[in-house]
Length: 88
Image (cartoon, rainbow, N blue to C red; front, side):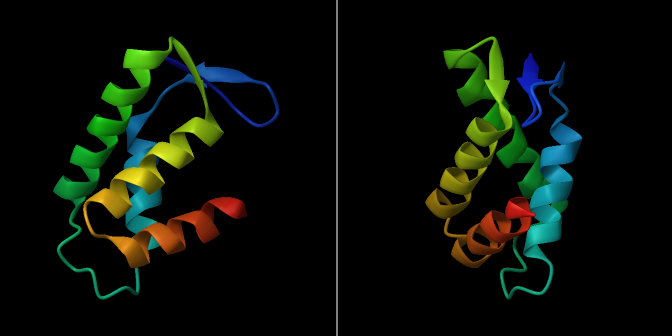
């Protein structure tokens, strides 16, 4: 699957980037149950949901999907920090 970046450049989707972004957003929260394995599972769900809809996705779609899944799973503080982290 390809992902279109903000600048219009297309690249191959890399779930490791999603995992690392989730873990970075989780730093400093009290949501300690969000482990690397949980982040990897979230990244897999993101990939599954987005590929079911499109062949090429955008970074914005990826961010929205990650945020939605974090909230669905009760990681509200991490979701908030993820939104703030990805704004930069």
